[in-house]
Length: 523
Ligand code: NDP
Image (cartoon, rainbow, N blue to C red; front, side, top):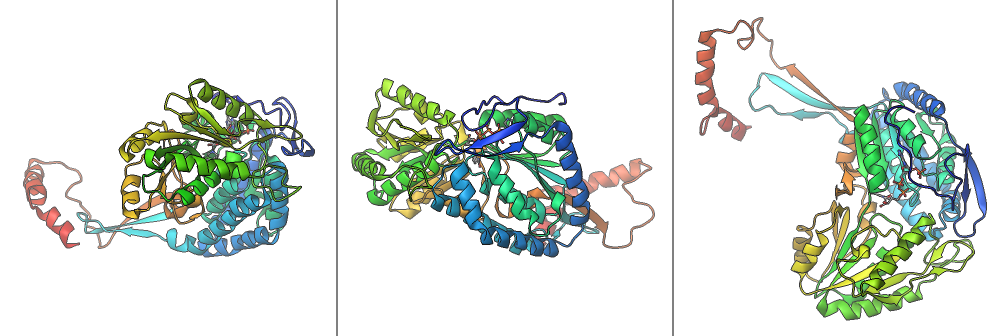
């Protein structure tokens, strides 16, 4: 390991073996059953996989984007054809309901892949830049492959998060090497198996298994870009490791999504949105509803309705029935949830429902609603990443916006109001990467739109046109439109005469309504 090596702080011994092992064992969080194992790749193996990916990329990157897109649609089709296998491993390895595995993971990727493949040629087409001053020259931006893109991903959406980045990397002509979370490695193993069945170049998409140090080894293996999705603290270490090597990176970090329920919010829709947005994937979503600021006029009816809906949710092993809420994937989140609840109750919050771990087997937690919360409680400030929805009563929307913006995180935010125009106005004042009016979570499925955070939720974006262009390297080509003279007046030798003309030219070109301004108005 090189000088910027950083050790993982996690000990995920509930779901997998400890960091010293040469094998990672994956256990079903819903039952505790051993599901399978993968090797921990050594630094040398990581470097070899990246080197093979680079060799495969050399041939892939020179193909026309249309051809890459056509060939990648085969992977999209294989994913759709084998959706049942992906749903099966997701529901077993994450303990998530099969409907969530299908909609949040497989469908999201089927759509994103279709969007990228159908639009890549347009999005990555060379862009001409009109030059307002240097009229004798022309500029064009080309979007060229970067090389090998490293992808480090978390355990909550072990298929859709990395595979979206894989499609983006491959369609732009790069290779991709994924380091899945140690908690859910088998899902990526399945994704690689499906990829290998499509006839696409095998080494173009590599997978490296391991713990934090394997992620560091990937960053140090000579990749040209990293897309990291994970927690804020790990993100800081990963960004530092990228900085030490000047590897450009996208940081998709934690969230603390506020939901503002305005005085005129539709109580039924808002309550249902809170329950879905707070408890889908057992709350282990970076854009989960993590704090509700409810106007005093709707606060009580909303809390009561959410209580009823949350209490009616059926929690259990997705292999046994169509339960609504699945398992807690990473066992430490149970301790995090209990600590938040204890802190909140100690500071005067009211436990509306839930609040406890469910008896085993498996790792399950009751959908929990807390009322009378205040901004002194950790549950209103720090990421929960579990099935808890805390409510704080506010006197005005102004107060709600102020509280929403207090957070050090800014990934998603939600506003509920019957007045859509006002909803948009409020949305424009919230510090977040995405603000959704009268819906929850949905923006992640809008493939055309950029997804990512502000503040400590990270930087850079995935999805949409800009993210695809950023996945490529921008090459600016500037060339002459007319034959250039042998001697350029701005080149050597410098002289008092030229300097004098340049001084006059400065005023003529730029002062007041100068030539440059008039030219830029004309063209
Ligand atoms: P972590 O930050 O703990 O881990 C993310 C990934 O980084 C894992 O693959 C992990 O490996 C790896 N890793 C850990 N240490 C290092 C290191 N030193 N160098 C390189 N890689 C390392 O996040 P979690 O897996 O616990 O995921 C939960 C977090 O992810 C939450 O905070 C959530 O908000 C965030 N998230 C953000 C999203 C977004 O789009 N903004 C989407 C989904 C989740 P290993 O697991 O083996 O330790």
